[in-house]
Length: 343
Ligand code: NAI
Image 1: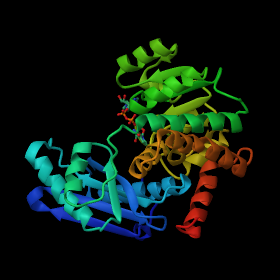
Image 2 (image 1 turned 30 degrees about the vertical axis):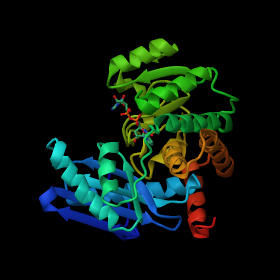
Image 3 (image 1 turned 120 degrees about the horizontal axis):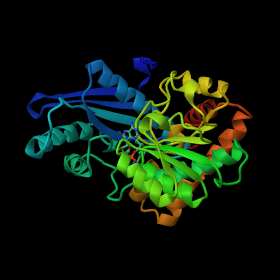
Image 4 (image 1 turned 180 degrees about the vertical axis):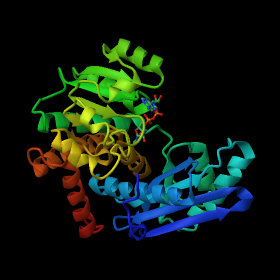
């Protein structure tokens, strides 16, 4: 996808270079109106330095809106470490994350990292040792992410499809890992009919057998006939080519960056398909990190995660029949940012 972000829209972009430690990284602070920038550290190869910078900025922007919509006191940020394709273990890995931790510490708490693709809790402990503030609860956020996605899905089914719960609603889940697997269990417990797919076909088949659903090949999951398509694996699965082939009425899942570009939401609506913004539905993970940092009880955390459902119902009401939940969410996010930290 081409960049649609003006590179100067970020509050600050920091590039980090430490040749001795083999570190090349980008820290993007998108908007700090609501608090320090919080967002994970992603490590992967990039075709060009510009691609690394663009990804950090784009993901940081999504975090701004994720936090604004979830009413969390954080700005949006994200960082990427450019991996050179070699496996990185032991001392070399430690040195790299020490150097990265030094760079994070120099932001004086304006950037709070956490885990993301290919980084681990152990890496974050090294970052913390260097004096950086790190959010990384010891517990896995995935069940909370799944709970939030389920709340969002249920609300959208109620608000858009006019169905009181998921009984008889067919849900196609793409990727039954930590989030998708738990989401499938919640859907099944609510009477939903499951269609599951995973690149690990055995994983999808075993879960389908356990929950009474059907497993299909990954090539078929997006276009399977269903009420709700729930992407819970990889980014940008809803492309301009996929839209005409979809046979669902809602897209509501966990995968960050589900839509391949800014025009896709309108293309979906033109086909009568409503998209629940991923950053609204999957905020259970960041709510969990905040709750652990603040010492909330599980009851309070559950309440905050379930409130994602109310938020989706509000967006449905604001968007009106056939309206865009993405536009409604962006309006809300912008209003919250305009009102500032006290909002
Ligand atoms: P995971 O790695 O536990 O599960 C992903 C699953 O998708 C795996 O079972 C994998 O085999 C499968 N998969 C990979 N490529 C696939 C493909 N092309 N088609 C079908 N299946 C495929 O990851 P997790 O934690 O469940 O995350 C799922 C999605 O949710 C990711 O996009 C992640 O960014 C997003 N997310 C996760 C959060 C969390 O708390 N874990 C928080 C917010 C977003």
